[in-house]
Image 1 (spheres, one colour):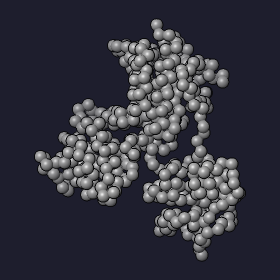
Image 2 (image 1 turned 180 degrees about the vertical axis):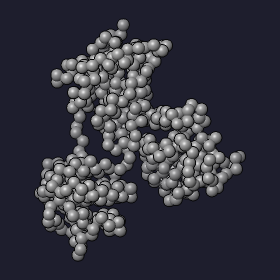
Image 3 (image 1 turned 180 degrees about the horizontal axis):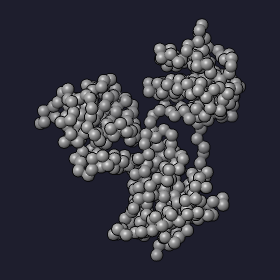
Image 4 (image 1 turned 45 degrees about the vertical axis):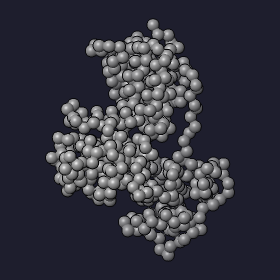
Length: 477
């Protein structure tokens, strides 16, 4: 019989390793678990950073008001060995990703983390949870404290494996089990190529990885002889070949071992697409995004700010919702262009009937940003030092505007003049939303002298195992 202290240590190590691994793959992330070790046990919860607060009614409905979750998972037939896991699907709770399983060693477990708004896909995170379920079941079986450190290390460094597992599962669903394209070499090549400079420039262009048996479906422009195909593992050579597909609709095609040639047009089903965008890039399965990559690692980020706080502020303002929607589209376009071209800028969204007087370069006639050519001009003007001044009328009233004001409590010297000037200026002017795009930081949304995108400081996990609560105790607060 496993003692409670060992069980708690198993859960703590898996939970903390998940938190650290997912925080590197995505944004800083919290992790929680709901579980029952035996079919007759009360439901327990470990939520040390209050991730699940706000979902109390739903958990009461699922786990206390009904026994469906218990009877649905009652059968362990077909589990031939201890630690074998049968999966439990995502509970589909707003703002959360969840995935769980059941086994002979742990009757039920469900893991949770944030569903960040800028994620390419939740697939890799679900695969991460899937492996955590299996490892926790195995640790309970082993009853060996030495194994806990191994499980912790595996989960902290699981990003590449999670991406691979997600791609493999999706391709099996599309093609069945009989596939020849090996995913690990593809992922290794993508990271290797992404870190390889050519005459000082980072790679750009698309590379497609297809099943060897599907090469006949591709419309090749140029194809290499079978015995002279460049090896995929020769990253420097492949990086040079990418020059042939930069800034075009051409694609470099590989069978997972070699570079086969250059092609255009339709690609076979279940192709893995690596899109290199200079300092970062994306991996897709057909048209479906899986993850991004940068700095030699895989990440969940779309590399595009979602600007949720801007959208919410516009909805809460006095302007008409349809106007707010169009204004949001304009702001998003300018911000995403700055992110793509990697320059910093500031946008002042002025919701007053009469635009605020700001020192800067005014225009004889404001520019109507609903016109494509003028919106493109505004994207270019954003590169000039100072802020764009955009009114509620969807007009650009000026650029290179200087923002200043008295010192406020939220200033951060590490953020530089653009960020702190926006804090000061917004603190002294009502009905303004200021968007600060930094070349090397996330986008900041500022209103009333407050950074609306600032992350809350969650209480850190203690360095030792904690005592779980029953769900009933947790619901009482």
